[in-house]
Length: 142
Image (cartoon, rainbow, N blue to C red; front, top):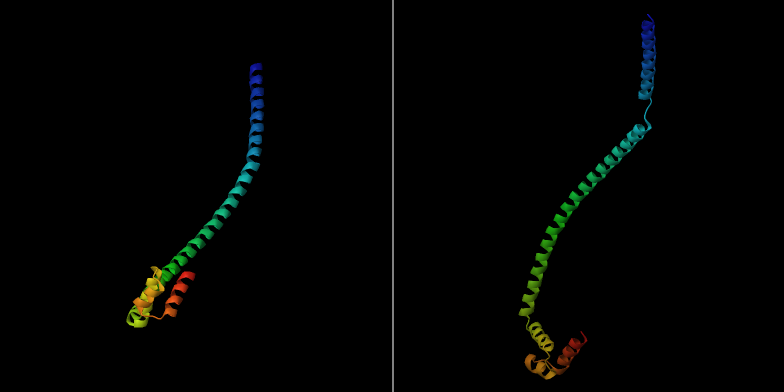
């Protein structure tokens, strides 16, 4: 019979001990962990940062696309302008070729660049001495 009382006593003691640990574990589980709270707030902050970065990236993409369209337009305008400039240069060359005086001075300029003397200029281009000297003087200063 004593063993029965000992067993009942041990049973009550182990039940009380088990109840104590259950209550302790329950209290620990209900108490928020400061690490988890910190991590949760950090995660929320990071999510806001990522959202802000996504918005900025979207704005940059839109701006880049707009700049691409503008650059394409400018490129086509530049190509058109280049062709117009080339056409004007060709017309200017044709006009210079047609005017005998311009043709004469173009030839004189080439002779001056090649190192011709005043007499050679006068003879080849049929220009007066003063003009030949002026062309050589201008070439030396330039």
